[in-house]
Length: 233
Image 1: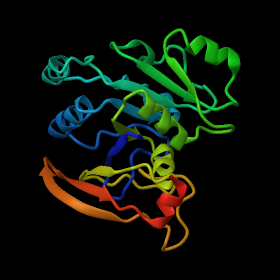
Image 2 (image 1 turned 180 degrees about the horizontal axis):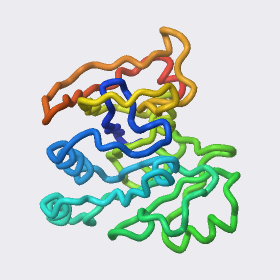
Image 3 (image 1 turned 180 degrees about the vertical axis):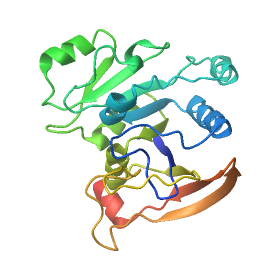
């Protein structure tokens, strides 16, 4: 059975997640950071795309001691499984996600990944090959399900989130909307990719909850299952 997938993203009031140069922007504050840490601690795995790794070099570790202790009390590793979707195995061997914190790391690649780089990555991570030219996200989720990974948190970026939604793999979305405008036609949004073309294709969401946090608002959505998403899942 595929994992339950939750997307979490912080964006500006105009829907941007970073600048046009892909520079990271602090959109939310300490209260939202703590919420995200709790969401991460309650997940079996956290997934990002290679673009996020190359731009931000995240470790994806659980930061708060209370959250780490919560996991340990449940007999789990301090940090969830950390996964990078990286079709061509471009991740640097020095990337923080490969070295900071304990726990399993997974790099998902396609058949087009450089075999030597894949061999090198196996020294610090588990490598899953899924897809010919790019990573087949549905196949990857199937593999994670076989590993007893039941709940997955997706933290970005926009291309990965778009692919996950396109494939009908997303169950819930948290969007924190901050009180700033970034602007720029080339600045990434939280759902990039090629986009949806027709009304029937547009994913529909049901608002579960809205919460004022600091100077922004958190919207919690349930993703409705459409005929289009079912066809791609």
